[in-house]
Length: 278
Image (cartoon, rainbow, N blue to C red; front, side, top):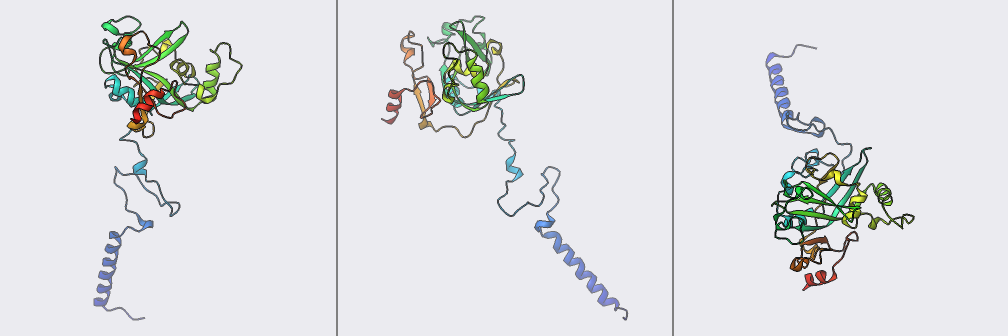
């Protein structure tokens, strides 16, 4: 074969260069551009079906654990904000117990006749109520049962956690509850009985006085996580608190909040629910 003329060879060389430059401007599936140092590296998808982007699978803007800023609000909005969030308890053996909060009570501070801080009095027992928001206040009732509260914004204000919807570790919860039950220990507890009350909740999660004054935003054995989108305002019932009948007008104030229709709530207030429809 004869030698190609120099002019023709130069033209072909220029054409190859233009084709190579055009290829660099395209992004075919098999030749994805190299990501920058701050971007995740995306490989070829295993199929052409719907793919979950790694950009949206990250939770940078919504960390799983709720931090101090969540608790730094007055007792009433905090009690409402708790609804739908997930309480997590990690036992010594690594077992994690989980439950979605469905019922709370707000105690607004020294003016609240039903609060342990009424009149502004501080004692060794209620000190956690005057500590920073997110501090656990755990106290003993009837000499044998514990209740768990979380301090809120404002001295002497807190939120009582009344009921959970069990999500994980139910058999362990059942075992923990059976060890402290009296008289009916032989009967197997139904799921809806595990955490339907403040003391039952503490039994099911093995919460005792040792948790008093711990920081819920930092503790390694107990914390709060974002739940799925919470109940709408129309689904939240505001009712009178339970078991505070000797506190005058405060006994009737609608400072208990629960998710309407939830089978996990400890006490349903039909009158309050009917008033919501008026």
